[in-house]
Length: 351
Ligand SMILES: C[S@@+](CC[C@H](N)C(=O)[O-])C[C@H]1O[C@@H](n2cnc3c(N)ncnc32)[C@H](O)[C@@H]1O
Image 1 (spheres, rainbow, N blue to C red):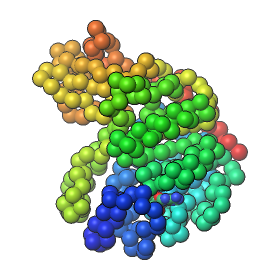
Image 2: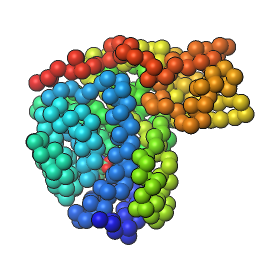
Image 3: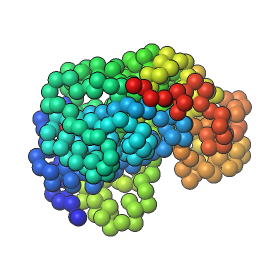
């Protein structure tokens, strides 16, 4: 069904102009449904990218844990997580939102999508943390929270067995996620996006202007489907560019120094092309550094960057004079990468 664009325009103005205004904006199931098939679907594409990376890194949330989708809205994030790892991987889904309408909508959609799964709505007030180990799912909530609400959320994060947190790719939100990572990295293993558990290299004075963000491409229907072109046009949303920031934490192996072997580097943002070379912002265990890739040094890699960086953007660089002489992508790594990363074997039932 075609969504009501006037409703969506109102919602977008609210998201953009007054994110931290406070107060519940979900005033009807129709608004949630319109959101679910548009803005939330776009958020779902970001989740698809994050979840594909986690699977490529052979990480899964603790088996048997409860999924708690906090600030669930229409519930897209929880559903994407359940679909990615299989509903049977988890014991149940709990949806939480300050809006009772959102909780009900998210619970109904999840029940329809995963008929065998136990789905609950968190209580209106009081402690929303399940008694059992839980995987906390957070999506596009940070810039709506007051300092007091953020502090309460951080306390909840500290009780989770694992945290999957996806936000927009804007500098302010991405920096807030880095600050949270710093706050939590002694209590959790940082699974992604990082390739190490050390202090974030973006916190140095010379990296102040950068932020930890990533890009993914929407599925093909975003470009071929008339509905998505109308959505893009009416709401002035560029569907080609899907920037996001994220962090994934696992309490298992907390305090371990690396989540993958530290030879891996991650490209932040997108490589920038100049005449005969690219510049990439490379996040490495030793810090975040701008590195150059010259066309003549690794032609296939140069060509690949022109199309788009292969996902996940993880590479082992061969360096010469600080420049990239060649790069080996994660997909060529076979079975090697995860060293002390929590893997399926470690994620036995946590009950
Ligand atoms: C931008 S929407 C994102 C919804 C959903 N997580 C997603 O990714 O589509 C933010 C959600 O956070 C909820 N929210 C905002 N402040 C909250 C709070 N203090 N406690 C619980 N939910 C909150 C809103 O009601 C809304 O559903």
